[in-house]
Length: 429
Image 1 (cartoon, rainbow, N blue to C red):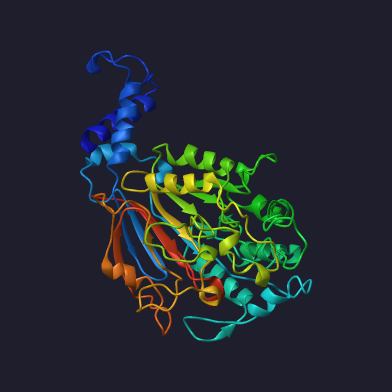
Image 2: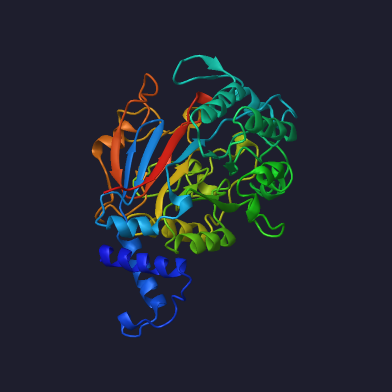
């Protein structure tokens, strides 16, 4: 089925390049419209996708469509100019930068907690701003195509800190294209009288953080009316769609869900999703404060509202659209869909939760399957399930694991020197 699908797609592209109308009846297809064959071919090709992962604590190498039976000629015909080469993405999350304690008591707790943090690689105490600058320099040195900033880059909303970040992206990262999604700390000032736990979110994104979105690679998504470009967006790099969804309030709304359906249900090649919070997928045993979409999330399980100086989560719990988003992500994951992986953060040492594996000391960097493990080409090795976590004496960059299908990556916080370098390439027979 895959060979036939790719052959039909190759013929379709050949007709398009020759300027012929692919919708006209074709004698060789018994007068069936070519558009019907294009639909069938696209469906078959998407259904046959295999994605392979080789990953460790600081890296992930992803091969889209590796070891398939696609004929070489057909595969070359399908490859456009922007799909050639290898995409290199650096995922940076939870930097927790605050240049000063701007407005105590609203900013004091987070500023004090993250003023100096121990680097997990060297054991040296560094400020979060030093760590972030070092990572941006590394992105430039490594020739990264895209920087994915995954939220909680700041401890609280600060126009001065936002200006500082944009300057570092220009000077230290050399103007590498970037995307940004907010984290729960980015837009929250503690101990401010607000009607809801997330009342300041959209207000701060549309004011304090607007310059970041306007300079990002997804700026073209912004329309000034909806949440496009602020709460969700996408950019295409080297044939890979990188989408972001702001789930920093633990939820996905109807507008975000509609955007996700539009992009994930159409077979348009490989895709990655950037989120701040990991999703409550099967096998992810983290408490409600650490994940998006846990069924018991709500006022009854909110044990950090007083610490964070905010109202409790809603009594009614999750939005229906949040549960629908989780189901969409699972059904759209390789091998049955185009989604290769989720890049997430939020969980790190200072706010970590113990997981069941006794060999690991933190939930940070826990890697999990997005796809249904009953499917062929959806597998996470036993070694992979353990090697992707932290161990008591720090990060072990040499750890190496294998998986197939769609994966959820959880990256160590940048405040502790963490990052993940992701490469995506097309499979070669």
